[in-house]
Length: 91
Image (cartoon, rainbow, N blue to C red; front, side, top):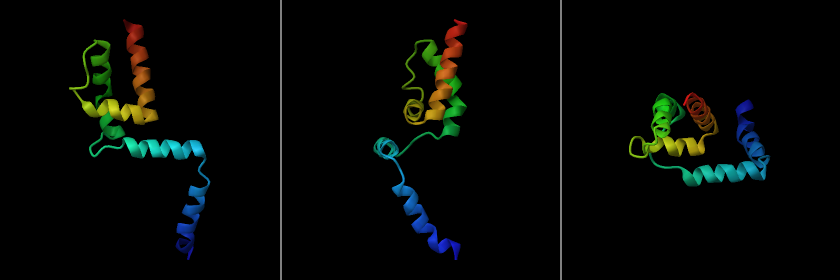
């Protein structure tokens, strides 16, 4: 019986989304590509990606999906930025 209300409850939650969240979701939908890296795939290569950038090499040919994922994912972007700060401090 609890599952009968599930669609209605989900709809009520959608109605409660604020304008900022709706715009953010729409942006994600617009930027979604057919092939993308997940967070797991990005974390697996992010250290090498950062090193390539620190060495002032072009990372786009190395792994085209990392940059796109970092642009969309706040958690991966935070990890990327933290690694960049650490490596820059070491230089």
